[in-house]
Image 1 (cartoon, helix red, strand yellow):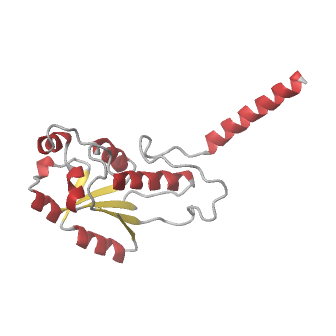
Image 2 (cartoon, rainbow, N blue to C red):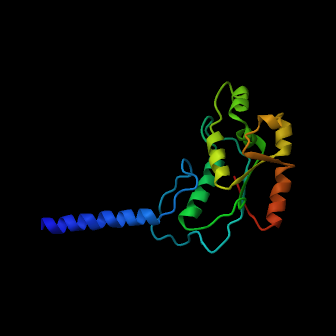
Image 3 (cartoon, rainbow, N blue to C red):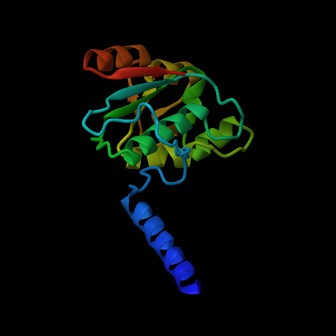
Length: 179
């Protein structure tokens, strides 16, 4: 009996290790946590090319915390990887505008404008960029808020306007997800 119990435990351990080895790593390791859903009706299709632009314009729901819109993008990137979708750099684009524009600031510039508080989004923006997500800032929002180029996180690129970026990308076949 003891031998059978040991064999069953060893088999379970090997099966768990095998399942973990088959699960792709998360491209955004420190953000974008998701729950595994048993037997989903619809899941990401690895034969499709996912080209998506996220419009992120709302302020953070919880000041001092990671912006929910950026966290959502990280979750999508991690979910796509989990299901074997191969992304190319620039397939996922974030356009920051309106009150969310301040997430694009460097830690120093953010702290100057927010009573010394650190930018809670700087690390996430870096991880998104490293994973191939293109993070953009609306130039109109930048100018309206009085941000200078040197105030911006080096992982963020400035476009003329969020409205033209979203229109252009949609015409190029990107799906738009708004907050």
